[in-house]
Image 1 (cartoon, rainbow, N blue to C red):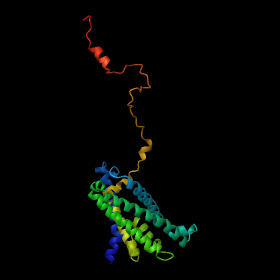
Image 2 (cartoon, rainbow, N blue to C red; image 1 turned 90 degrees about the vertical axis):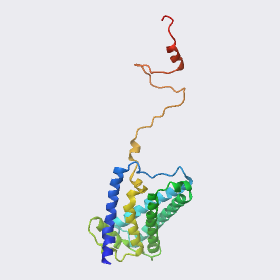
Image 3 (cartoon, rainbow, N blue to C red; image 1 turned 45 degrees about the vertical axis):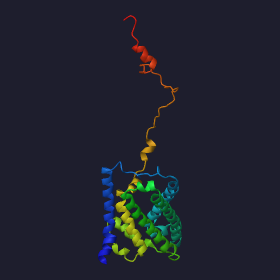
Image 4 (cartoon, rainbow, N blue to C red; image 1 turned 60 degrees about the vertical axis):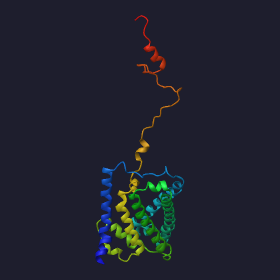
Length: 260
């Protein structure tokens, strides 16, 4: 048992983190043109317009909730006057709503990809692997939230006593795998699924999350040429005459001179 405890809560997370950074570096050096979402909007857009914002905005609030719960120590919230029962309500109610949005959005995207033939044919093997691992992380997190926080009593399970300090110590190379020994199995599955999705992240379309269009706001304007024959150039050319190819000019230049 000690071997599995040390591996899953000591070695495996860092293997996943190493795979993530190695994958990001490799993908950037070898596949920059593939660093994209591989959008399938051209095949179907109605269901995508409903499911994609629901999934992505729900995921934004889920990530914010994870960062607050895992990074902020329990003593800090108590120091600013937030009691443990109040913190439980603040974390559980918005977290459950965000989890519901993610599940509904993910279900809609998955349904669209399976049912729509054109979208299904454009799905690669890496996409299928990504959907499996991403679905496992979402489903396990939802089960953990509902079973231990919503229906787990008035105070739920206090993960800030075990999971949060374990993760903070892990990231500073101060390993304490024994801290995770008595954590409920729902959270254990979710943590393992989360680190697994981190490991496979760079090798799937999820890599597009790191491609923020920062340069878009400073890009030059796109200049379009008018198709209207009546449109004229606003600038006046004083030093040279542009070359023209009107039919009358060509015919005039080809006519032989009478004095030749």
